[in-house]
Length: 406
Image (cartoon, rainbow, N blue to C red):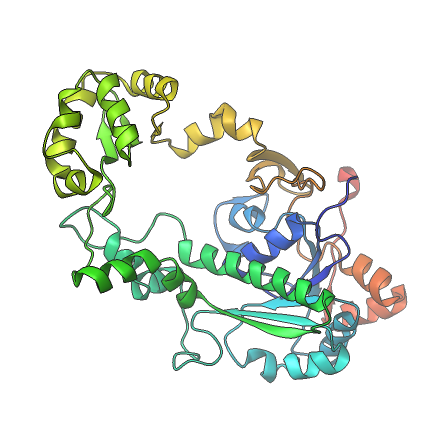
């Protein structure tokens, strides 16, 4: 098997639900050994999220591929001792607890760094560990609202809407992964271990840079305008004879090409549309003209025509259409993975392609406690009798594949 960029890096994953698991899934896909530490008998909260397949959550499985799972009770002293011994042999710890929980468990960064001075501790929370809101809880919808994204999302004149996917969680997961990889790189250059502190709200504000600049320049609060763009035109969704497409021609060259393709060369010299600035100013007039043209043909007709002429466009796909699209399978972005309990299921692939160290999802999300014995034996040299005692005390939980599945 070819090497991956993070081969040899060991990550202890204390995260749950989405933001943290999204981060550690990225690290796992890049080749890190990610050991997910979960509560015995319960596991990651998202294991309870519907729908389920043979008792396994589709939500959980979608964000925890390539990881190992051990069930370890960190509230018990012996459980903390086992965890800190694992820290001694690891590179990174990632968690998305509320602030101060690690300290209350007596496994905070100060304690971990005494055990392993090179440990990197990544903490992901709604509002960070130092700001005035550090003790507040957060969900994705709260972050999208407070971060300004909801104010820009939705139909013109309509109510603010949350983006259909949890971009507040995903943004934080991405930035945390970047932070961890950067800290690892810094450690290789002699900078030692350190803390990486990521706030979901900060990540959402980082996405808003363009609109902060717009407001500073114009003094006008950007408003919701549906699928249109504040700075480019034409750039929107358009009804066709059978469905909806999106099309963008955001510079003069593309706009001229569009007009030629549509046999409306007169629009090129129309004083309302001769520059992008004017097209943005008169975008409603322009979209009305284009809309009356697009409605006359099917989406397939326009997509094929625009693809041939090099005009950016696309059909608005449903999830079913996304899964069935040949591009997704050709790019390994929709994959089928075999889970030991749930059986075959679909998962999204890894979007970063490497020429020399390819990364492809090959292992499914783990069953709760699936790797407890393997990790404690191989990493800590723990004997079967010791693990049996810990299991009888409720400190660890284990799982073995049923005989008929082996």
